[in-house]
Length: 360
Ligand code: C2E
Ligand code: MG
Ligand code: MG
Image 1 (cartoon, rainbow, N blue to C red):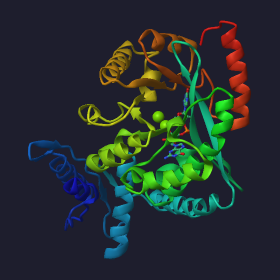
Image 2 (image 1 turned 135 degrees about the vertical axis):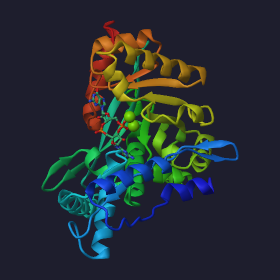
Image 3 (image 1 turned 180 degrees about the horizontal axis):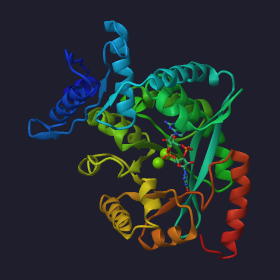
Image 4 (image 1 turned 180 degrees about the vertical axis):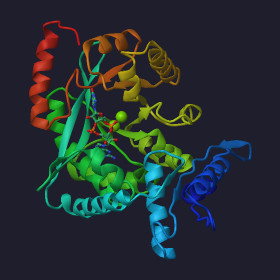
């Protein structure tokens, strides 16, 4: 895992003297291809990903430092878009300034009371009863209004700020737990990011919050994504094992989105697998996508995991998933993410409907 950590962060620069736009792109393509050759470490195959940013002198900058800075911006853009290389564009500067400004405001969002906890119901597909809820963060910016997590979480994840956000959401969810239980919602899921998983102190930090609120780990599920785990499998496993020992339920979110995960799944101490939304959405239009969903459900069950489908948007999909043996569903068909008070109203209505024998 030491080697994996080093590789995860390795970066270097290449100077192509006399190259033009096209030859620089060709060189980037070649270097990228070389770097993406899997490594063999003591018989373990390690997959690698490379991202390359290109900046040209004197077109983009004529001194070394700004040139490197712009190559780095292009590199981030390549990482973001999962492209193997990207040539710098002036728009990256403006975008990065906007992101930096947002990030610096996010630092104060918690203390300014701008964060909100939203909860989205999860439903048992067989019985139709409420299986739990997922905590999803919302940021109400004083000028810009509601900012969706997709707009700020990925940037926060590049900084230690994400760890504060996780603890905020965790505490907000724990505080809400007694009311959730009273409304028949027995478990809350909370998202962890890669940095949380790499933080060996995370379990102790969560312990402190549980103690503060007299809460128990057993009513909580911690979700992590396969990409967060893949960053450093050994370390992620260590944190996950510690969390499992404490009684948390553990879940792999957005499963299927990467390709490396299948072979590690059996070694991860998790209880639940959440099938990525793309597959659930794709099921409706493409029968071949349904085969993938079916296979993922089967693999999950083989490993003794409960399988959850995300992005269930209509009754037909919910029904089909139930037929395929998928355990739980989450999506707009059941309910959108909403503040706790609204969720309680939703839960009352849902339970009443269920008692009248209406299908999920
Ligand atoms: P996620 O954890 O996979 O959460 C599910 C996302 O799918 C949520 O987006 C939810 O609103 C959306 N969704 C649920 N059902 C449907 C549906 O039927 N159709 C469609 N189109 N979308 C649906 P949201 O709330 O915007 O969150 C996006 C992502 O941001 C989350 O994906 C998660 O990765 C991240 N995120 C949100 N809150 C937190 C948090 O507290 N901590 C961390 N680390 N990440 C968070
Ligand atoms: Mg999630
Ligand atoms: Mg997900």
